[in-house]
Length: 161
Image (cartoon, rainbow, N blue to C red; front, side):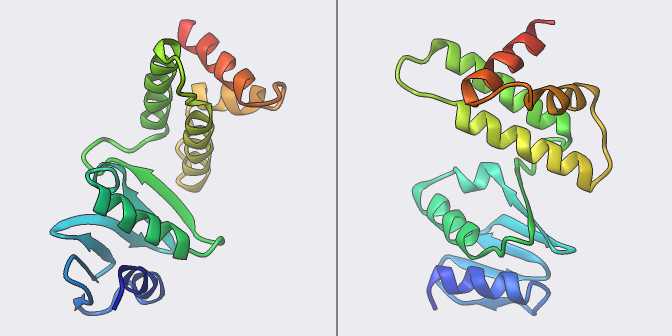
């Protein structure tokens, strides 16, 4: 079986017994493995993808992309580093790191990544009922701005205050 088929089986039958379908991917008991590392967890219809493993190597990144493509749109998907505390504030910290990179970057634009992280933070906060004052402020005021550049400016303003 291909890696894409393994990912599809993981989505459709996450609690199945241990299944090894390819030389470098396996799944079982709600976890999808890339080599010997947990790439994703399937928890109550929500997919949690390990941000660190998904970006560890080219092959792990490809496997994570296979997984993302087979996830139905009605599933909630969260990407974070399983070794870090996972809260809306974690997402905000990642956004601020990208803002710092954006200030120094000449040709790379991180605004799309920042908006993606903000969206996930809001979704996480709503799903798990973990409010964040900073996130609430951003979500209330982001609609006042149009486009990614304005969102970046809003976040820069928030960081400075």
